[in-house]
Amino acid sequence: MSVRIVFETHQTSEDNEAGVATGWLPGRLSALGRCQARELGERRRHDGLAAVFSSDLRRAVETVELAFPDAERPPTLLDWRLRECDYGELNGAPRERVRGPRLDHLASPYPGGESWQQAVERVGRFLDDLSPRWDGARVLVVGHVATRLGLDHYLLGVPLDEALAAEFDWQPGWEYVLET
Image (tube, rainbow, N blue to C red):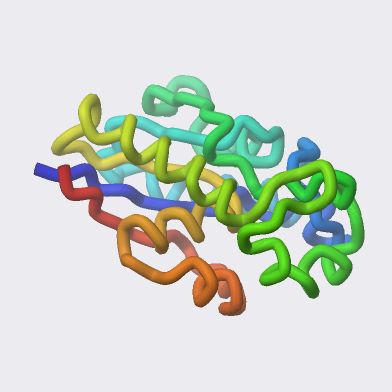
């Protein structure tokens, strides 16, 4: 059997627009992001979702709340393991200051934070817990760049250094299959 995973990033935040690497700070959606979140809901409303799993950071939670108004929301579970990489002292720093040396932090944590490898391992632990309960289901996961890196690494076999070096190109969702 398998779990079919639809992944969507949190929608555009004020920090995204300002060029800030939010990391583990909560962040909040911009006007554009709020519009995108409603579009996400329209796109996924009839997708046969058994559940929604979301990062517990505010910008991801806000995406889910706007995408699926209360009466229409599938069961929703917040999970800290779906968070962005913790940039530690660089949470909230200019994006270029964090992004430039990303490969330097593949295995070495950001000062006061975590490494990309640690962030991706969190996603792996989430996947381990997903399969027993949701076998045969289609679920939505709302997260961040680190979440997508983890899904690509564990479900597609993409080496982490390659995934981290690649440009992030947004699209309206990614589909994965977790074989159980």
